[in-house]
Amino acid sequence: MDLQLQGKHVLVTGGSKGIGKAIAKEFLEEGARVSIAARNLNDLEKTKEELGKGISIYQTDITNADEREKLMQSFVNEHGSIDVLINNAGGSKGANITDTEMDLFYDTLELNYFSAVHLSKLATEYMKKNNSGSIINITSIYGRESGGKPTYNNAKSALISFTKALADEVAVDGVRVNSIAPGSILHETGNWQKRIEADPEGMKQFVKREIPGGRFGTPEEIANVAVFLASEKASWVVGTSINVDGGQSKMNF
Picture 1 (cartoon, rainbow, N blue to C red):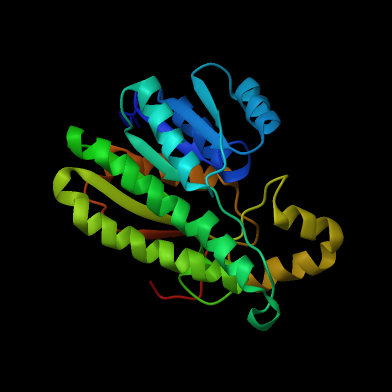
Picture 2 (picture 1 turned 180 degrees about the vertical axis):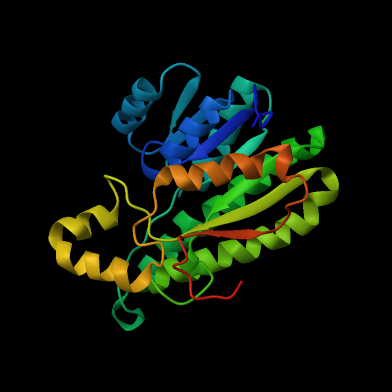
């Protein structure tokens, strides 16, 4: 299927590894011009070497508002505008609520929520001028139901709510905003890989108990949904949160 993404200018945050890297690769295979942003320059350069031509890298800390503005300005200066923004950067901190310092709640919201809100606002300014664009926020099934660390759960819930609110606001301007809520996704640098190494039998039981699909998901399975959502094949998908979880979520919708 031709998703008609050739030549589209795509920015992926947290794009040097895991889900972000898989999303970048899939857009490249669709003929898009892809840029990835992350903090670690070595990881960025390694990913660029692995994925090959057609990819640009930006070293930045998206938890810093000034750096977010510089990132968007640098991207637009280099590419002329922005067609697709993937807010993928994220992570969890802390433990139980009563054992977690307030600083970690603020830090987690800055990484998972405020960075996406700010970059979306910046990108929307350019997308509205072109009457076209797609913003995709990578959230979590634990943003739709209880589970995971509270700091992460809270931030992803807020991001899903923001997705719907922004989508309804800018749909008339030709900008579509959606989110993808992954379940447990296995990749070599992720937490699930570390847990498997620490407790292989326990993780086997987790999969058997929690994931009807009988295995962990892959970053590529998230990436496949991302390119579809960014394409005109999804032209009437607006403000939606799509679970990609092998049935893991306990919700009916």
